[in-house]
Amino acid sequence: MRIGLLALTRDPLPRLRELAALAEAVGYDDLWMADERFFRDVYVALTVAAAQTHRIRLGPCVTDPYSRHPALTAMAIASLAEACGGRVALGIGAGISGFAELGITRVKPARAIREAVEVIRLLLAGDVADSDGDVIRVTRARLGFPPPHFAIPIYVASNGRLGQQAAGAVGDAAIMEGCATPNEARVFAEEVARGAALAGRDPSRVALVARLDACLSDDGKAARDVLRPHVARTLAAGRLRHATLEAQGITLPAETRASVAHLGYEPGVAPYRHLLKFVPDRFVDALTLAGTPNEVTERLVALGRAGIREVIMHPVGPTDGDVDETIRSFAEVVAPAVRHALEAP
Image (cartoon, rainbow, N blue to C red; front, side):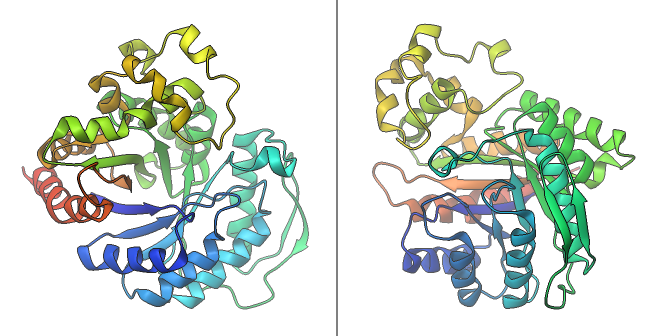
């Protein structure tokens, strides 16, 4: 199982430089950085990381086709590839952050992703992109410098059925946020496979990736308590779709959701803390990787057996420790144990 570390670019650039060095040193395969509006620019941050590392693969997780035109994304990822010898991947999804502030309307997200990937692939191949799509329009565009000599995999992120089918149709990998149970992973795999089949592609060529918040501690309850507010926000805000949660009874009362319906994207988890009594441990386990290293190992092995081939882990520090402890423990303790279990006959 491939493992990636997700960093948020609200952290200062010196801290992101430290995280890049740490991620490479302890064995992560990938370092992803979020492309969030009004945080530090993701490509500046990735370039800083490139200068600090030699092996680890780098990329945005995820950019979007609305706030950045796909032609600009192609230019940026090609430039990053040149800066670090080709060790890059591109994550793209429909996005949400900062759209209201920028006056952006998010229309036809699955179609936008398909059209964006088509434009990006043309430009990265050195071809001319000329398209009048439903969402993305480009006229006789071409990179003004030699295209990269490296294959740049494109990861398509979506929690929606149509977006996951788009990932199967055009992506090298599909990312789902909060995919922490085997049941959810299997439905995710079915939608990606359906999109691949409709496009005449082999579904096995599209890697399934779970993007998960994680907190590791010798005290499993304490780790779950750290992530409980994040889960409360996810369930209350309703911005992420999950095919199997409602059937498992993992939902909040309607009146509880209504109490936070006025909140926008940016407030963070603090406004949701009064909902914690509605979020038992099994809710936390359904959406995150929280617990002892052994507990997290067992759950990742189950995900791997359900078809998940990669994990992108966003670390959250335990209350009694530093976030770097979770970063190290995940790479040095959990990942080797998971790989050993999955490789065993």
